[in-house]
Length: 114
Image (cartoon, rainbow, N blue to C red):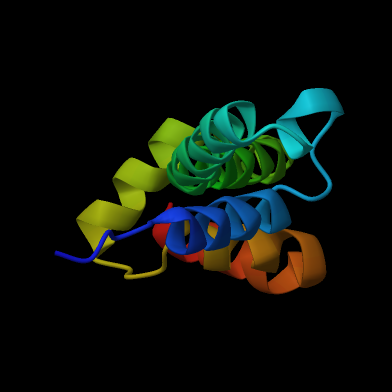
């Protein structure tokens, strides 16, 4: 029976991993074992970051709307509650952009909702 040597695919896989971790720091870009761990951790952090970005932006929009509504004499929670009661279907991203770019339009929305 012919002997099978498997070094070719192993080397190919190792080189691909080293290439994927090219700009990592220290041994994380040079040693396969460390590079593999660093690559897995980086992808995990990227996944978590994609989920966290949604939270962070929603918090930012809420803060912006709160500041804009307080200038107009109400609070964020009262404004959102009034919007639900009047069935105004604008999400927080749109409201935040309106509060920044078109304060007059945002003021009209707040007056309508009050």
